[in-house]
Length: 284
Ligand code: PAF
Image (cartoon, rainbow, N blue to C red; front, side, top):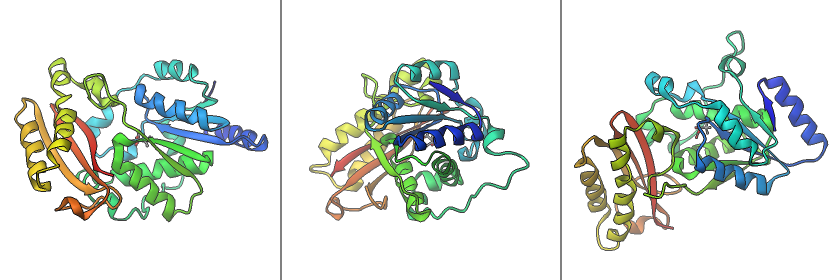
């Protein structure tokens, strides 16, 4: 497995793959890899001739400096995990390599539409422009046939699709199912930041969502929203930032179940100082 640190090495590597007619799958990550990332990598390896995984904690998508500072990093462990998966190359650049101080200001006015304005878009100003910026850059450099993203970040996938459409990029976006710990907690690099007590209660997020799917058969959208929020807010150290029940395509909140054939509940919960996100499908 090749470890690539610079843009020019990456371009050479991609040119070589293209000359050999090899289809490329890209798995963009911010490192601190867990079984969720590895499931994306395995799928990419099974569907493409060559797979490139990027490891880059992208500063422009962090609206909170503490979150950027404390974001877990373990490059050596990431390399070891990826080497076992048959990945062709890892692109692990420095911040200066991606955003050189003397380079042009990176594009930050992507047309992302309404899907980038609701939920995470409203709570984390600038976050999705930062995501669009780095993912667009990776797409320009790697020119992948397919790119893989985890459905835990359900809204991120919608925003990336929107960026791909507005920038006319020829790439297939492949959403991959959420991976969960045995107790139901959605795997996330940020889980490593939870205290033991917080980790013990964190699975309640998925339990509350899963129970609410059953309840949704005979309760209104608003009743379900309130039940989930109240149940989680009653737990020590937990505070729901938002829980929205939305049309899974437009991400607009719905009032009645019949409004959409595809309904998803998207939640963000503070568990102490750790921000956890999750989602659940009500109708599809
Ligand atoms: O989902 C993530 O880890 C990041 O937002 C991504 C897509 C790698 C862009 O930095």
